[in-house]
Length: 64
Image 1 (cartoon, rainbow, N blue to C red):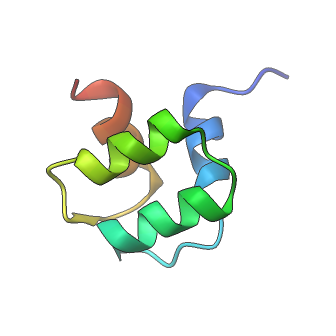
Image 2: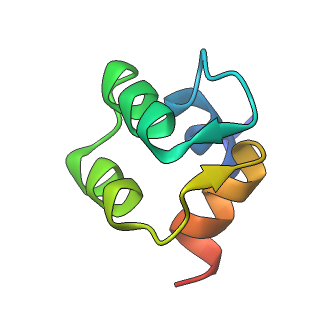
Image 3: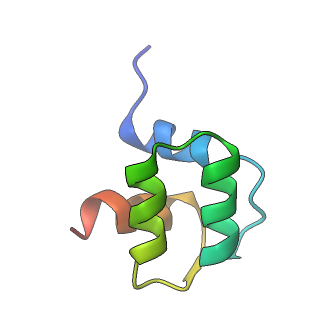
């Protein structure tokens, strides 16, 4: 089975307790080996808090 973009995003966010603020999400992404462009996108996001992985995924890939 192929991974979807959401599956990949969820892997970067392993260990996050939801809802989470931006700093927690960025730290988890770094800890879980997210590529630098993903970490940079999270840092520069206008969102300060996320309800869950879907919200992060939307901020990274859908809202752009």
